Amino acid sequence: MMQDIKEHMHRIIDDYIYVEDLNAHLKSFIDDKEKENCTWSKITICAHKMLGGDSPHIHRIAAVTELVILTLDIMDDLQDQDQGTKPWMQCPQAITLNAVMALFMGFIGELGHLQVKDKMLVEVSKIISRSINGQQKDITNAISTVDDYLMMTQEKSGSLFRFACFMGYSSLACSEETIEQLHQLADCIGLIHQIQNDMRDLIRFDVKNDLIGKKRNASCVVFTIH
Image (tube, rainbow, N blue to C red; front, side):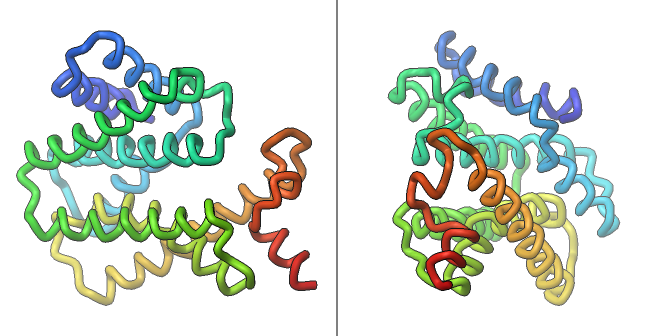
């Protein structure tokens, strides 16, 4: 994560959260996320520049991308009850849930300051909602076939890559064909990324092991069918 993007994220927290302990928690979440060498902001900046963009606000926009992905990551960990070393998992759950709401409000407020178009807000809502729909299928084990898994994964993970790309090109004049190609590419990358995560979780020998947890991921679906 680039330093100026991190500074924008901290500044957004300062703009909306003045209660000191919650402010400190949120900044610790951001600092911890930085250790993962996140690429989400890089995807936003790359998509913007690749399509000819030169907005002076692109790093502010990329900071919003990171905030949204961080929020969804926290929600995912709360739902799965794993990643116990993460600072948001070591807080009382009530505080973490409050932090999630704060991050979403900061995201909406920052987009307002950037004076984005109403159409952009609608599209952001659709993309994030698509990911939430996929997440719902995942946490309820609502998949039974390989096709179900592929669809769920593209919705859950592919949408995150769609969102990172969208934040980069949303202010540009792009053809429908270009946007569709980016969406397809994002879904493919998201699928590969999720399969890698599922395979890694499969061979863990703690509570994260998906076989022990009877979670239906890529490998478990294949085992069930065959």
